[in-house]
Length: 227
Image (cartoon, rainbow, N blue to C red; front, side):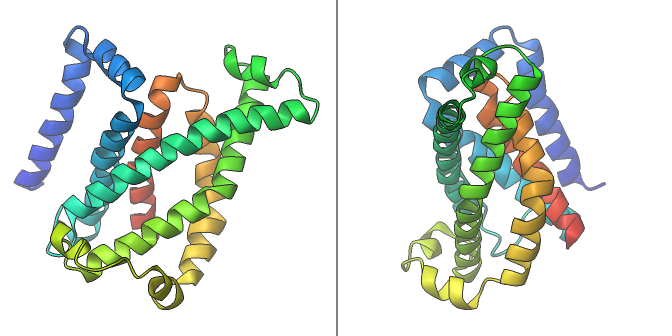
């Protein structure tokens, strides 16, 4: 175990200790989430999802950062993607309940708003399936495009903004669609994201985006194992 590993473990434990032992920390977190939802979504994903990529890099190459990795641009992109995910979660929760109600399942709203039940589990699963089927492929492709752009511009904020994002070129020539579709879409969405986000939508609302961001850490480990 390296010194950097000990430092990371110390930081993680210190953050957990703040929420466990400092009175009011959880209440403060919940209040901030309620009053500044989009900002908190930005921060949660910027920190946790980027940490997931750093952890995956540590497993693959033995370091948490390297030249060209691009911690700062990754944090920026993940932050804005986190805001997009928070928005999508709101849209698909409301939209799925409305859709199920329109299809004749008039109890859907009451199930979803109530305590845990098979009905609530069913609605949460439907929300997860619709969001991950409709929204996730676009989200994942855009993230892959920005990831390639970060790598090609040296992993710096200045480099990232030095030229326009060449979306058409990257989509046509630089994405491995056998992996993007054959593994990321075809396998991780139904086998990981459907059940994972079903759990997400069963949690209290103020923890849903946080849990979704934490899932990014888990997915980073899954992708590392796949590689």
